[in-house]
Length: 193
Ligand SMILES: [Zn+2]
Ligand SMILES: [Zn+2]
Image (cartoon, rainbow, N blue to C red; front, top):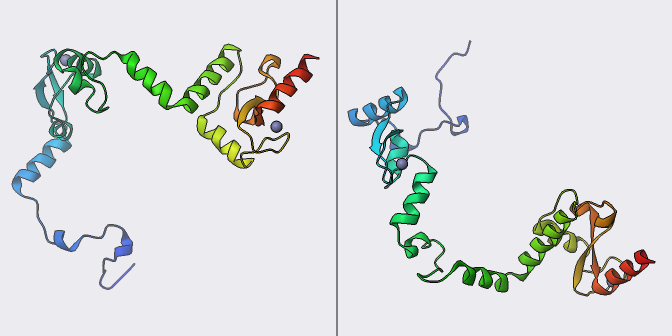
């Protein structure tokens, strides 16, 4: 059995900061903690459908608006908020502008992502197993020093499926190698013959 005076050390993990030492909770705080622990719920009216609902005090306090569920929240956003407020977090879309404008702008500004997604959709259509992320493809190019695997030249690289999709190859990154356009088309010619 351990004897002597027990000194709390920082390394014990539960070290109490100096400013909190000897601090006691007020009665109000104690009540709050007690309520929370007993599972007392706060009643509120949904800001969208006005149904009565309950929520944990800790959750309730954190929000300005209160909803039954996500569908009430999305309804509220669509009907009660102006379009500027709806898209305020994006900071781009203005009233009267269609989504297509923003989509087109996104396509123009993110050609790499779009090319990647298109290729992925193509593979999926062909019935290929699995897929890979843009990051994996970037890492693969990094691994080969951004050079064509076949001719070792520093040219713009295209994705090549080692086992072609048409022959049941997967779309996992393991089945992909970076080839320059020249080598890629040569490979296709070879397969055709
Ligand atoms: Zn509701
Ligand atoms: Zn090449």
